[in-house]
Length: 156
Image (cartoon, one colour):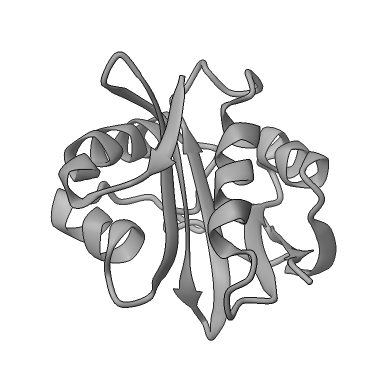
């Protein structure tokens, strides 16, 4: 597995992975498939992106992680192919993300995780994020209330 910075040429692979995660449901608040243009702007090299890294093997994107400005804070998103979670991909991505962000202008990273996303909550706790609040009333588009946990990782 190779972990490296994402580039605009990775948009198609990253989009396919993200849309597979969205279609599987349950682990992201994103509910509408995105286009490659959207993924590039929001997660690869748009004006608010601080870091974008991916893990690949034999040219296939296994997972990716991006930190960017959202709601005036540096927010993280982590996406791993369904079926490959809890195999070290997320930890490898976070190590690269930290290497990219440390020494920069960002002093923290925020994660907003669906409260029903048990694997996501475990992942962010395992890599050192701590609870800072939440939104118990957070609902999906269909009105299903899933709640959201807010966590923070301090870089300094």
